[in-house]
Length: 113
Length: 109
Image 1: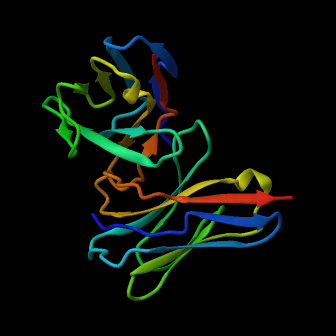
Image 2: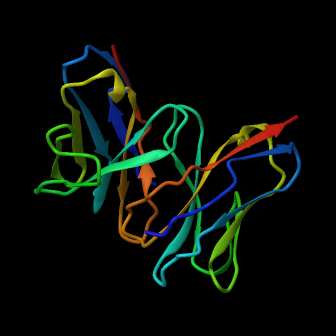
Image 3: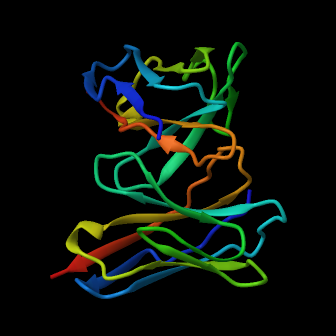
């Protein structure tokens, strides 16, 4: 099955700064998604990363705060902008191909101080 | 996307069979039922997917009644390493997953 690599695996950042998380899949996929998982909670879908066009954001998430890029079929980035301690969370990307189940990266554990 | 309801937590002992039931009353005709497993500090891992009746793979079975308003994940002879959170999801095959709260399974020796 396909493998997703996420970088960084963890980071500690100062409030007011931004962090870009990279997600690389080892084979072409049709769909890519970004999730957030706060401590002890379930996953919340942030957005669908669309190749070559603007991401589709879920309710409560906006492009200015979480800009997303997907320049090709195997790579996407999520930026957490102007961070505050409330952004401390695990961020995960997932990918999907036609007629296969979605699979996930290992996540990026972000701590904002 | 249909909402799912499952128990928040379950306890079991090694060697027992564990059945986790999920309710999805508003499942749509083209929706599939998918279960994921998540260990701490890891991304969710696919376990099994089905549309109706029974599906079995090397790790689990999935039972889906005719009305498809619920489903049951069955884990045979669990071990300590099966301690994890199990998520039931309902949706089409577009890959967009909406997670509920999940069931935290604790397997004891």
